[in-house]
Image (cartoon, rainbow, N blue to C red; front, side):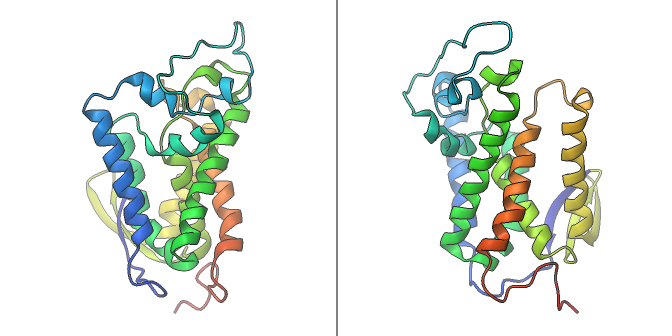
Length: 238
């Protein structure tokens, strides 16, 4: 619907968004290794698999046989999964949102706390997804991608800066400047609709519950992580 390009929101407390850039760089480097022919079994080794995480069976059959090539403890995959992506569009979609909105969330909480915030949102997103699909056919499917962590950044930005103007591409071609509340609010509503009406979803399974988990984590954690004196909802913005 909208592709964000730039927000009109200068940094106030930090000089540069080091952690945001580092996270983007790590994701890009990992995907470069994937694109150069990384074995699918290696990727699966670092993915979250609900059936393995909770030791449950997929409906109608036994626990899925693992094709992991690297023995990664399942608890660790709740962190590693968010740095792998299925294809270039999966990567670009997540990184664009992180690039546009991550710097101001990092500005509001500080460098190290933003890293903890980002990882915590991703972990909670993975847990919510795993719990919600544990008794479904998706229980054996690997979960990868930064979408859950980025969803946390999106909800935090909405809590902090709903009135900030954002340049977007509408319908992928029309440049517009509209409020963050519209850009990100519509994205959030879309995630909720897709969870409530899965029959409308893409034929390729999408981890909608991971998005919801990330959104919930980000909205809650920003209340704890933000610097003292940082207002919510753009209070005081002229």
